Amino acid sequence: MNGTPEHEGMTLVVRSTARLITGFIAVFGVYVALTGHVSPGGGFAGGVILAAAAVLVVLAFGRRAASALVTERTCHTWDAAGAMGFLVVAVLGYFVGGFFVNFLPVGRLHELVSGGMIPLANLAILVKVGAGLAGAFLALAAWRRLGPAAGRTEV
Amino acid sequence: MGIELFIVALLGFMLLASLIAVEAKDLLSAVISVGAAGFALSVIDLLLGAPDLAITQVVVEVIALVLLVRVVLRRDDTSVTEPRDALRTATALLAGGIILAVTFFAIGGMGAVRGERTPGTIPAFGEPKFVQADAEPRPVSADYVAKAAEETGAANAVMAVLLDYRAYDTLGEATVIFVSVLGAYVILRRVGRRKSEAKEDEA
Image (cartoon, rainbow over all chains, first blue to last red; front, side, top):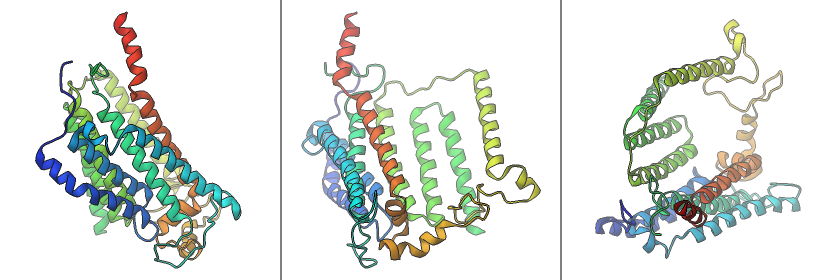
């Protein structure tokens, strides 16, 4: 129809930069989530950083090229998996007492494996928030054009 | 006092940015003003000693800004329609009245005028926030800070509260995100929309 064509990625400069730093952004997101119990951060912040990496890929390479890495289907799956994982962590507490009871040994302070179930819960929230926000971005900005001619392209 | 002055200045900046965001004719300018207000808030978080919150605020602000700019740039029409003047004045008066009433009761109503402290109202700046509703206010946050490391093994007390003491609240929060993302999918999905629009085009 009229207006802007389907977004097909940005210039070579943006693509090269994105190719270089996307991995670092994603790894930093996972790091922020996994060390949430020993330093500032946590699953939510890490998940948003992970989603930002996905957004960068989609914006830089265009939706079609990025679909090898991020599709709405993978986002749905991992979103649901993260939510279920968080619930599983909560329900596992029943083995020692009740809902959300810390069922793992506490461990030594300032070590990566400490805090009982907190790292597991952070991991689940990381997956949930990362996939959820990436999916929401795909839905809002990349699935179709907004505005007067919304939904009428590519018919 | 120095930090508080800085915070007040940042709050003023946020107010200004919000006003510009509301009043701007151009949608892109409004979006950028909202982003400026958000980044000022993250600086305030840092000054108040809340790095967890500051990190989250910065990353959410970045992704929200990217998303909003992207959506705005894809729209053909970036101008906003002006509501009528009478409606504007009425809305502004109503909002001002609600703000005054909420502030009055939050700081303790008539008790604050007489100089008494009412339990369950806003504590003084910098005081612990978890105060029980009993007649004798006992800060729970002192217990959290004292026992978090020993009881949960998490060096970051914020995470100890979020995912151990108050994990149930976090579950509710995660549910809210899940449902809102689900809502975005349902509203913006392509399959159902195409069919209904095809019908509209035929009619």
